[in-house]
Image (cartoon, rainbow, N blue to C red; front, side, top):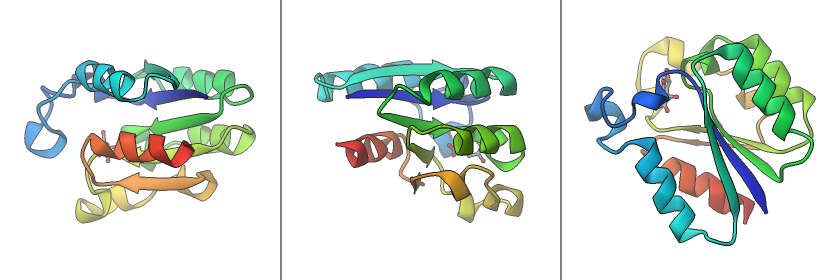
Length: 137
Ligand code: DQA
């Protein structure tokens, strides 16, 4: 099974960025632990701070991978282009958020991803990614 985790802007700073909200672990460290727990899954990881690069990666993976786990971060709430990319592909997308976006500012309650996501995992910290991964198994 071929799964990719795609992370959007500022998630390269996990571990350093607002640790009270996002935790103290870097995504690189968390990703290694996921690979160790699920050695039979062909799991890859991509991060970009650039909207168009995220769209290109969604398109690249979107016709050959078995699943995409997408945390589009702030672009979740603003990007029609990423929402359209999720709609355009055939690979199922699980939308993930580390924090509970519905317990935060109202602008985080809107998502351009959700209408075309297969499912949504929100608010379980980094564990949200593992829960999304399990949904593909
Ligand atoms: C986030 C929530 C977004 O509102 C925020 O802009 C992020 C991270 C999360 O994983 O909790 O950067 O997607």
